[in-house]
Amino acid sequence: MIVEIVLFALGLVLLIKGSDYFVEAASRVAKGFGVSEFIIALVLASIATTLPEVTVSAISSYQGKPDIALGNAIGSALANIALILGVSSLLRPLKVEKTAWKNSLFMIAVTAYAGLLMYDGKISRLDGASLILIYFGFLYYLYRKHMTLEELPEGGRGNPKRDALIMFGSGILVVTGAKLVVDSAVTMARAFGVPEVVIGLTMVSIGTSLPEMANSLTATLKRLPNISVGNIIGANILDILMVIGIAALINPIYVDSTIYTFTLPLTLLVMAILTAVLRFTGRIDRLTGGILLAIYSYFLYAYLTGGVHLPQG
Figure (spheres, rainbow, N blue to C red):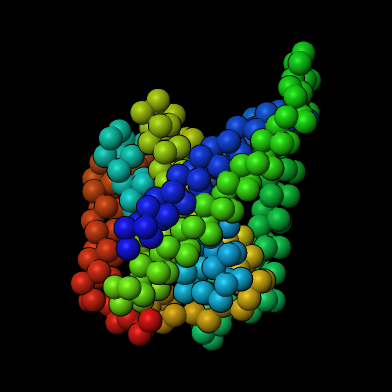
């Protein structure tokens, strides 16, 4: 068991460091090709910090462990808001731009759509493809609305070959780390008689959300609340559309009832709270942060104490 814990920790380190290297190299490449800073911040940051969730869920689905794939995606979306923004806003209230709530509203819409797909107990490959198409449509919308052609500064392209190699190498780190996390988590779950869905919703989802946590906390301490909140909203949109979509495309996902009846509604609740405070106040204060953390504490308590009916795993 000690070996499995060490492997789990090693996997998380590889996931986090691989994602860090990826986003730095990808940002340099994007700047080199004249992509606006807005697109880099909104898209590449969320893609890089969500890369662990994408990889973990894809590998889990390929290995026939859909509980971890779906549980990781929904659990990460819940942790991103209730845990990460909760802690960040307790450190310092987060005042964001007036239009932030519109992206948050889109996040609720795609999560509700994913919930509709789960209604029959299965997310098919066709369902997964529809989620992926929505994400690419979202990217196209952002491109049309925000893309600007900027003159490149002297030497703006950096070293494309080096950065491409760094992106490739960091991708390998992420894949390797994801496999270690999945394998060790499943082994520990079985050893303790804990259903895999619980591991996916707690240990794995929190672990793979660490890049988002690092980014948001750093941005909060540096008084950059738009980056802190924007990264979380972007990551959640990607969690729902691409993490679940890719996993379902690899293998159809049979939805565990606890995710549909308990975790998903709780996730929609914290999303609604976030959207409401952004719409009407434009800031996430300490009171809201405390409420979000209380909801996440209740979520963990319900699962870890058996308060929620769990499948036999």
